[in-house]
Every structure is written in structure tokens, then in C-alpha cells.
Amino acid sequence: MWTVRCSWLRRVLVDGRDVLPRLLADDAALKGIEEGRLFGPEWLSSLGAVPNEYLWYWYYRADALAAEQRAGHTRGEQLVEQQRGFWSEPEGPEGDALARWERTRAEREATYMADSRESTGAGERDQEDLEGGGYDRVALQLMRAVARDERTTLVLNVPNRHTLAGLDTDAVVEVPCVVDGNGWRPYAADPLDEHAQGLVTTVKAVERLTIDAALSGSRATAVKALALHPLVGSVTVARGILDRQLATLPSLRAVLTSSAG
Image 1 (cartoon, rainbow, N blue to C red):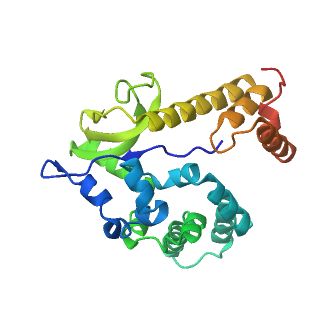
Image 2 (tube, rainbow, N blue to C red; image 1 turned 90 degrees about the horizontal axis):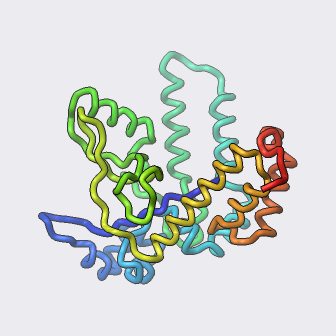
């Protein structure tokens, strides 16, 4: 099941002073960043925060659906075709594989959330976003920090413990952490706003239901997980999604073997 990162930038400290309110009050400055063009200055000002770009699918669900329907294909289908093209290219001279992969990765990054940017007129992605690299660089930064005891800050998936109020200690959360030779330690986080807390709690419940469905083989639990997902929001739609997936994916049928809850 596809989930979306539920995260919001709520403070920007410069010399110990939070400058985010000043940014949120400046429409021209907001239009200079990708999130400002994507969500619109008025909505960011209403939230009092800058959401992760994935949350466009939550806040603009009808627009997102219309954009997907106009595109005629999903992001997953696009990436499958791109990967097929990469692997079908004939081998070149030594070192050419890396260069071809870098071109493929750059294309993937450039077309990231293209549907939303086209729908909102957000334009092309910022160059610094294209040059950021993928999870491979995060993994290398993590290994370097631990192995060399080089203190750094990384956004990692870690057990919640007591980082976010409202979630149990075993819940996995994606939060900024300080990393060094002693391992990782999440930064303390202020409690979420009510609407953010509700969204995070709902998505976490959906994730756990999805795991339960896989472990139990229950199709009823899989329907429940889909129906409660904020991007689905309908039992009828959830059943239709699951039926189509079961009809086309033998591996899914092999897991979901029971109709009981």
C-alpha cells in the first residue's frame, strides 16, 4: 500500500530566532520555493507551516486525481518503463553503466511529482533538489557518521520512543536525528497540531492494518486498511481496488488467502 510522508516544517531557526513566520507572511518569497508554488502562499499561511510535498495529494486530493487521469498513467508505470529502458540498453565501455544510471536517476528526479507541478503551475524542480542524490547517499552518510564518529544530522526511520506524542513507543517515525559513533538520537519534537496529529495517527493505523492483513492473509483486513486510507475514503472503492489487484497479481493472491476478518 502506498503511504505518504506526513511531515511539516514548523520552525526555521537563524541565530536562535524563528524566521518561518516572516517567510509565511511574504507571498513573493514563498513563490520562490517549490512548496510555495505547489501549495500556494495562502494555504501555507493558513497552516502556519510548510508541508512535505507529498501532502499535496492529501490537501488537494480531487486535483491530484484529475491530474492522474489527465496523465493517463501512474508514476509507478512511468518508472517501470524507465527502468526497462535502462536495463535493455546494450553494454557500453567500462564506466558507462554508472553514467547511464546517473542520467536515468536525473530523469527520475526531474519528473518527480510532475503531475502536481503541471496541475498547479509550479514549474520545473529546483536544481538543488535534482542534485541531492538518493537514499544511497543517506546510507553512506549514516555509515560514515557511525564508523568515523563524525557527528551529523540525518532524517531517519527510527522507533518513536518518546519523540512524537500521541504515538506508541514502538511506532516507526521518520524524524531528524543526530548521528555519531554512539548511534542515533532523535531530536525532541513539539506536539503536532490537531489536524496533523489526526492525519499521522490515521496513516499509522492504516500501515498496521496492512501488516496485519499480510500476516493473517485476511482480505477483509486488507479492505479495511484501504478503506481507512485518507486517499481512498470509501469501502466500495477499497473493495474495487483490492479485487483488481487480486485479479492481476498472483503474488498478492498467494498472501491474501482468507476472506475472514
